[in-house]
Length: 81
Image (cartoon, rainbow, N blue to C red; front, side, top):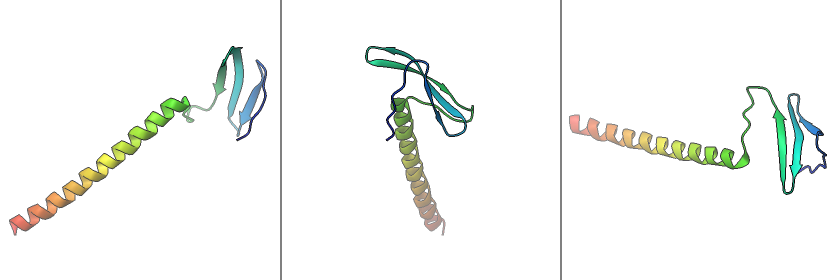
């Protein structure tokens, strides 16, 4: 992890199109401004983790649904024979 010290108004550039600027420092809180291309999704870390968990759950559900459909199809074929 890269750790930097920045003052209010100072920033950091990531890659070719992402800029993070310290907007305000108040006690334990730091407000950041983020400039990024529209195609780059920017999330707070806790929101991003929730999205990842929901995506994993949806994938697991989809896999279970596919397995059930396959078993149902096999069962139906053997009944129809």
